[in-house]
Image 1 (tube, rainbow, N blue to C red):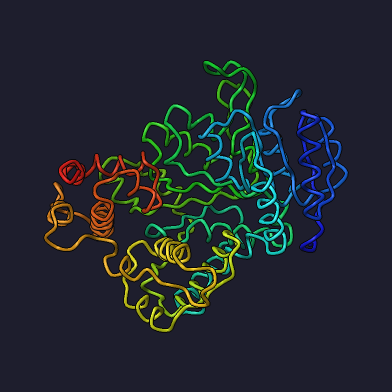
Image 2: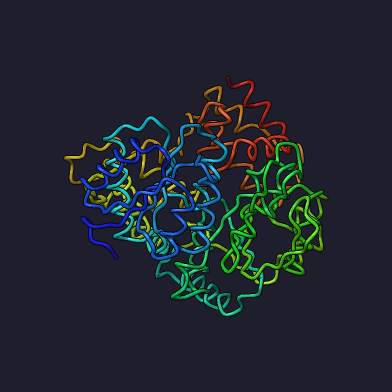
Length: 466
């Protein structure tokens, strides 16, 4: 592992002057820069050695940084990869960061911001993200010890599909990462871990995103594109929010899971997938089947090795350790000294139900950290937000609109009832703002809209509160 002042950096950019400027900044931060002006040269370098950091232009003479990043992820040829582009695409940026990209920058770059990014990269190198994720997931309570045992059992059966079930914010992605680490052991750093949030992918692009596409497969397909299944070869493919896959596309996923074979969109050749598949959902698949939104045969195929993620309220004895680990990560993110947590604040946290689970705790700590003076030694906890949680006082128009709303379908399962109430509370706290509520809930805008279509009375309350 490199020291805080020494790291190797591969810089791939065809703009000679720009690359020279970046190389100088890398050197000033203690790095050793290797500059390449084409993907061919970069591939030759990564074939010989691994780099701690790769700075990668997206538009190059002989290909795209997007595809080269997929190669790096498969081979484990870099710990930290940063994409730099003069023509940013928001959807691509989101997908890349979800697939493990460290950061995504647009030209022109600010030199001070770029140097700050390099300092963050050095912190990541000194403490790998996977280890940090494990710290926030694992605890010493009986519930978490049971979870660890289940993950260890699942790791011994690498060919079995694992289904992670739990409420929003319980750490299903972290559990999938830990399972990846347990499955591949010492080789986990070189085996690719490829996550996909199924709710984020438009229905007409799902098949191409997952299985790849051949040139000419659809309008605008001017070249062959690798899918996420191919990228995950030899490692772990994690399909989050699997219940959000449109019904008409579920048969394609079923065939892939049954035979571990797939055909790229527009292709004629069957390809084999050798790797682990992990899926996750915050919904009851049995209820989705009864509602006609999910295939029963696919449910049985996914539910081979089921692991339930306990909500935070069931293991509050772990709360202090989790909070400290999250706060440490946030201080690293914002490059600030870590304040301590006051005993009375921890007591207040233990008295909260945390409907948003660990994600809600993280958001609370982040809000509190940003309002705390860096010179202070103790965190100024945002207790007003905690008491609500963030909901307007009873009787106010916007709160009443949501709290008094009643599901059109009164026969909700306990899980649906909890989800309904959490969305109602969050929509009230955000004054009916759907995008803000989605961000706070950890959902995409489209995923929350689908839930509001299911419960139109909440959508009506949102309109009346604005």
